[in-house]
Image (cartoon, rainbow, N blue to C red; front, side, top):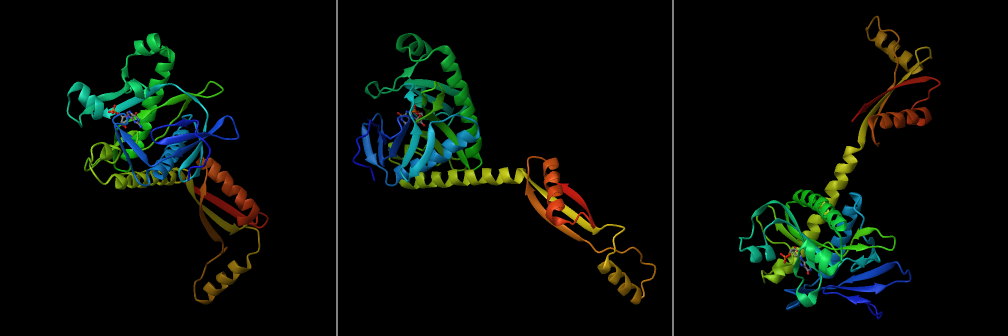
Amino acid sequence: MPTMQKPIYTGKAKDIFETEDPNILRTYFRDSATAFNAQKKGEIVGKGKINATISTLLFELMEDFGIKTHFVKQISENELLVKRVKIIPLEVIVRNISAGSLCKRLGIEEGKVLKAPIVEFSYKKDELGDPLLTRAYIKNALEIADDETLDKITELTLKINKIFKEFFLNVGIKVVDFKLEYGIDKDGNMLLADELSPDNFRFWDAKTNEKLDKDRFRQDLGKVEDAYIEMLKRVKEGKSKMTNAKTQEKTFSVRVQVLPKADILDPQGQAVEKALASMGYKGVKDLKVGREVVFKVEAESESEAKNKAKEMCERLLANPVIEDYKIEVVG
Ligand code: 5GP
């Protein structure tokens, strides 16, 4: 539940509060939904907690790929702690497939796979309806970013797009387009900010092209809540696929063969040898009874896995005074 504390900023779907730490803010994700610059208003039941969780999982994904973000942690179903940043008032939009305002502006059909991803900038200004900007507007009229910053933002946004496209395709989702916001922290670092959710992405099912994002609300397509629930499911599926792939990549199968040393008396071996002779098997000599230990071990490389296994043999798996061991590692 929202507290009695007053937000320092109330957005269209989130409230932002200060915390005891001046560098950390708390964002509360509401169920409210707006479209067409808040001309259409409504509520999507359960959206707040779904978007808070999807954002958490996707910010973590970004951090895994070395993208710096404002995300600190999720503290409740609807709330995240984030680093305080000064938001650059640009809506950075990347498009892979034609939809929304691109189709309106250019008079082209929805669903055209663009020759290459497009990065565009809009002015984050509700009163003006977030107008599309040229670089000259940004640099020379608004003076909110220079060429170097815009190049950096473009490069980073294309990298993020590549990560998202691959991540979502793996769970049967096409990333049509999305909007990002960047901010500058107290140390001057540029961090990916705002949220990452079906509110600011267009997601289509890769097989059916079914819309699984806020367009269901914008266009009155129905099953709005279901789309958000489905996207949370797919994001979770994508994350667990990644975790599995990661552990599989770094897991090695180890086979350790332990045998009594050649010059060591092996009573068990001698007993078996005797039993075989009594059964009529003649000419069986130097019989040793050993054991095989098999396991999987996490390691960065085959040689690290072998070193780990060797250490295990010395300390536990074999008795190096009376036993020899042979290690086999399969990647
Ligand atoms: P379009 O320009 O086609 O309306 O939107 C492109 C993409 O950016 C869509 O994924 C849309 O959800 C996102 N987007 C554009 N403007 C806004 C905005 O003001 N708020 C949010 N949350 N997303 C936006």
